Amino acid sequence: MLNDQELLRYSRQILLQHVDIDGQLRLKESRVLIVGLGGLGSPVALYLAAAGVGELHLADFDTVDLTNLQRQIIHDTDSVGLSKVDSAIRRLTAVNPEIQLIALRTALDEDSLAAAVAAVDLVLDCSDNFSTREAVNAACVAARKPLVSGAAIRLEGQLSVFDPRRPESPCYHCLYGHGSEAELTCSEAGVIGPLVGLVGSLQALEAMKLLVGFGEPLVGRLLLIDALGSRFRELRVKRDPGCSVCGSTHA
Image 1 (cartoon, helix red, strand yellow):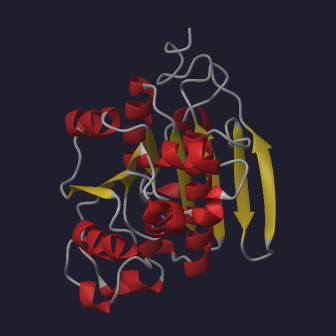
Image 2 (tube, rainbow, N blue to C red; image 1 turned 135 degrees about the vertical axis):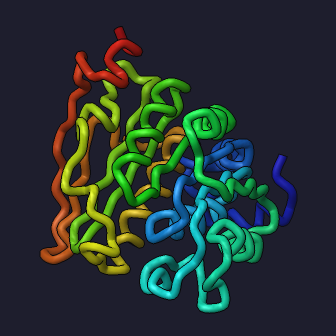
């Protein structure tokens, strides 16, 4: 049940007919894995914590650097040199002491990633490299857990939802195959701060829709964001029956 403090804290979203008390309880009972606590993971973690997701599993092996602070809004100047997980826990505890925070401070190998994915209801990929995205996707397909994937570089962003519980859903590998220009990192190509905030906020929204069960998630759709022209474009994405990752799963 929700106590009086929780009813007050979450009252503005409980007022929404798409959430209500039942939806808030679903959020409270949910467990979510956030892979990466950088530009995308910062707004994701802050919004999901504020929304009352009961258990956040925070995965990042990196430490806070001064160059991160232009866009990674969960961290501050006093966090420079600290583990990103510890910095995030400090901030999220201040935002919402009602939730549980699980720290994953080391790099996840195949086995530990599989265990981390199996322990939650939903995964958000907020990483900044293709190999991690591929590994997270494979683990989600194997465990049949929905994946909310976001990316941003320079002045362009992308967002999609891959849900192996749905026969029609593609996976990340269906869309990107064995790599793309997205392998560039922000340290190499640059990125504007509000763009990662926008993509991360949309990731958090998609996660809440999946956890509560309202709206139309971005399954089978790729949202493209052009920050330079302030334009949004949507592409339809189909599952590849011959995909080496998800093809046999839906056979």
